[in-house]
Length: 428
Image (tube, rainbow, N blue to C red; front, side, top):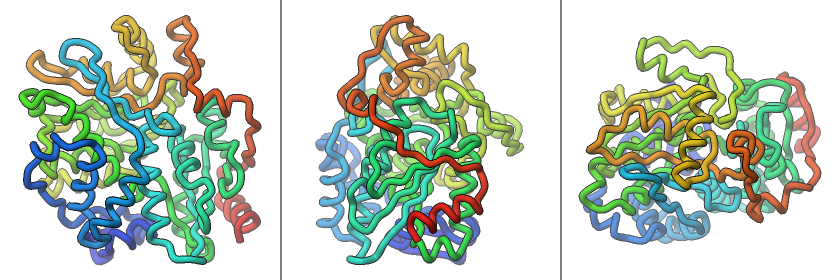
């Protein structure tokens, strides 16, 4: 696979280079020069999830890594399921929270960790620097915890992740460093970009990122869209409308890649909370990020989504028809209504999925099949869900085990000089 830097078309790299490098020159994202079409999608959809995922990822990166390596990566990374839950009539939830940290990011983070472990030579240290608005931190921390020669630094916004989310990634220690930044997620994301632009930090600490800017995470996410349609009756697959709760927009980019490879998704709904840069852009054609607003769907509290250039590139290159993408912004009141409505249907959910559900319901036609993504276990937002519903939410074991552990984070202002000093003190 050849990937091109979307900000500098003269920089063309292999998959291995893109994974190890993270970002290209000028903070450019890497994106495949060509996306392969799969020969027999119906046959693929009849396969079990792991076997099908090997075929999908082998079509993308097998020419470089070899099929045997791809099989090993998939087997080690995808050790959990993604069931499609029937909510009502023609509406389903794709539950992506059955991994070790109970969030969809387990798929991408674990695949990336396996890729880096496979591609990194003995004695070749790597520093993973990543920003999280919630679930990325936990998924990355658990995926990389204990891996030799890999240190992880996770930045997160003070007071803007749920207490249980914070406990999941800030209590591990060892090779996992966590930093509470006095500012919103966009400040954390900006610090990551500054670090990649600093030659001393990038080269001396062998910097890499586990955010969705890393192509390995993005390609891993393609696989569960095939799993979603595989669980629908064959006659319903071409009617599927996918509603994606969107913050950094990597999840939607992966869905579009899946369609490009031949998955018969009918169209997409980009579902956001009050941080509505993309819905406004699709209406006006003006890219005008506003100050980030804190919401109960905090993992989507992002005003400048990192992955949007990949979606823009697919549209501009004619890979995906812009007419297949619509967007909806769902405010806090309607998010709460969504959680309540789903509960009345017998389906316990949380704010991010509720945003996707409400956006889907606004647009779904009677002859279409709607699938909204359940990106996190409701218990990860225990306090919020309990406040909305007025009933207790039980903690699964993965959360109960960390609830009383001590947070090991350090605190910093949103100042790159301070972060650089911290990283060299801890890792240099």
